[in-house]
Structure formats: C-alpha cells, structure tokens
Length: 128
Image 1 (tube, rainbow, N blue to C red):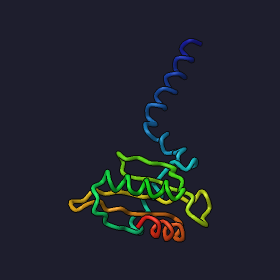
Image 2: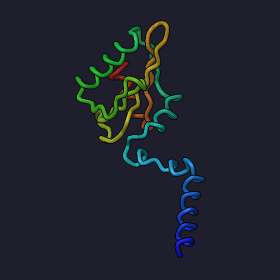
Image 3: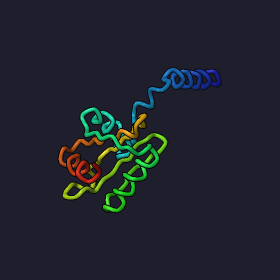
C-alpha cells in the first residue's frame, strides 16, 4: 500500500512538472478588465500625436487633462508607459481607451487606442 501511494504521488508530481507554464494560459485579467492586450493590439490602428514635451511631462499632462475632465483613470503605469481611461462623455462607463507613450528624440509619441470608434474620437478631441 505504501508503494502504491508513493507511485501515485510521483505520477502527480511528474505531471505537474511536465505541464510547465501551460497553466498560465488562463488569464484572469481578461475577465476582470485588467488585461490591456486588446488595447495594445488596437494601438496599430489608433490615433497618434507627437507631443513636444519629454515623456514625464507628457504623461503628467495627459493625466492632468483626464483628471480635470472627470475621466476615470482605470490603470496607470508610468514604467510601462501606458494609461487606461474610462468614462468618456456619452460612452458606456466600462468602455476603455488605452493611451500609450513612446519617448522620441523630439518629444513623446502618444497613441490612443480603443475597441470603440466613438470613444476613440472623443478621447482624441479631449487629449489632442
């Protein structure tokens, strides 16, 4: 009986070790709204503007504009260079707009992305 329990335990351990990172295929962030992959994919078809300000100033300027306009900053990561905002006028409260920053030699390239065309237009008018 002892040998049988040991064999079963060994099989379970081996199976778990061989599965590697396959358990990470489930991403709970995609169900809670914390995942920005969809906004990153939409970035290529987003609206872009070059700001003359260096990255920290451009990030602060966009953050201040969102805050003063009563737009919800859902996620903000200065290190990863993005902001996710929600609550644009006449939009569903959960419609997200991604704001991505890319420092350049002459300032900061800011790209807006959203899965909603109308939210993207409203964000562009407000931020650009």
